Amino acid sequence: MDVEWRVSDRPVAYPEAVAEMEARAAAIRDGSAPELVWLLEHPPLYTAGTSANAADLLQPDRFPVYEAGRGGQYTYHGPGQRVAYVLLDLKARKPDVRAFVQALEDWVIRTLAAFNVKGERRDGRVGIWVTRGDIGAPKKEDKIAAIGVRVRRWVSFHGISINVEPELSHFEGIVPCGISEHGVTSLHNLGQLASMPEVDMALRESFEGVFGPESAFARQPSAVSAAGA
Image (cartoon, rainbow, N blue to C red; front, side, top):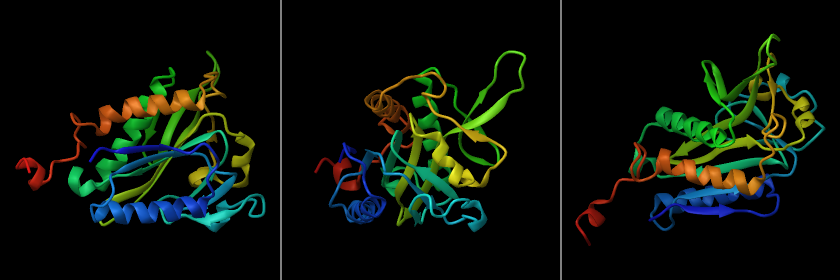
């Protein structure tokens, strides 16, 4: 079955999104539903990954805080940020969680490149980063995208978030991903005034190169379909 793409046109409450992912992941595993990429925004909130340090929640009363169940530490989600939940059957594609995370990173990097933004990986730092600074001025690195995944019975859920035009001051309530020595940025903060539909289009186009039929993460045909049944 082809990957289903879903775009929500209203902010989705976090518990609602988690419940939907849980149900869909189970359906993918038992073969009753196709894989899913779900593009959405959340109302302002903080999520705590499985490695979250309570000391990194600087303003616990600012926004609702949810235990996420994904890897990583504290993350902010809110309007102006494109969240992409990626529910794929890794057993049918490539049962390698580390390679899957690297593929998500590549997906984000390719998407940012569509807007002339050079996203980069950093050893020891989760997510995608950009280097910025005027000529002759000290360089600084800011985070523009977060990645956090969970895999159950080889079905992935959670995924990525790209800062398109969020209120960056909302990140001040946490130490994002436990990293205090660097800041956060967005496409608009970098001068790239992309709309959310434009970002969605770039995500879909770059997804093909990373997870499409010619990629290392292509879904493998089942024994039945391979036999022509």
